[in-house]
Length: 88
Image 1: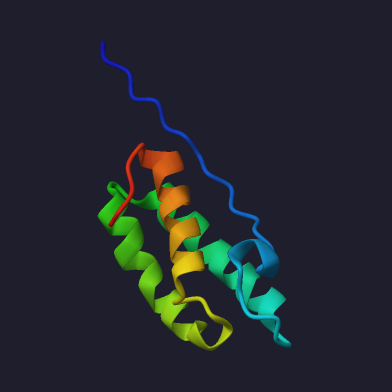
Image 2: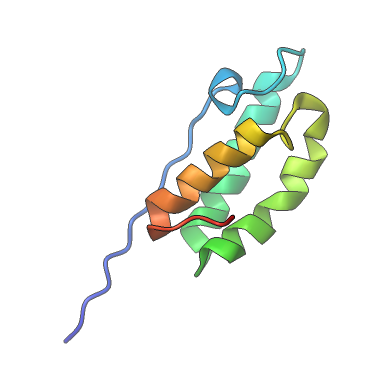
């Protein structure tokens, strides 16, 4: 009987670790990014599913720098931790 190993990913990055802008509310933005990414990574079937599912929250916090290259890099690293591959 084949087995499937399922890795659960916990996401708890600070605003600094996400590399968000140093603005009031950045910690709240980081917490909401963490929740959205953790949910998507643990429920998705593919790296593309995670990327698509998380884009609305990254768009919502674009004013905090969430759409910059650094947070997108961290998202790709989290996807890689779960799936062994990232979305480009």
